[in-house]
Image (cartoon, rainbow, N blue to C red):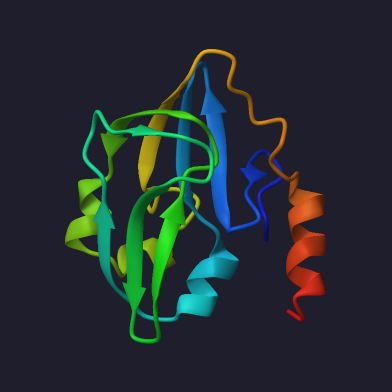
Length: 128
């Protein structure tokens, strides 16, 4: 159930490149680990992020977790729908549950991110 057309960060964010803009969300695996998501906070449009930098946080009934940028760039869109209705992320984490869109910095690529197969191996090695 891991979409093959996306790339993945080891911190469980997914990335989908469209031109020079990357849509970012969290994986179904991450949603399952969090269980009931109750709060999402995202940095505002215009925020510059580097790879691995925090772009927000997600809170569930179990824990608060940071959200990390899988790529360097600038936030050009924030999904207000998931901020208003955090539970909607679980319904469609790879679609309507996206978090932010990042305009890639010059020279930035998704090459260092995991493929779907590599990500599957990572979560399998974590005992899931």
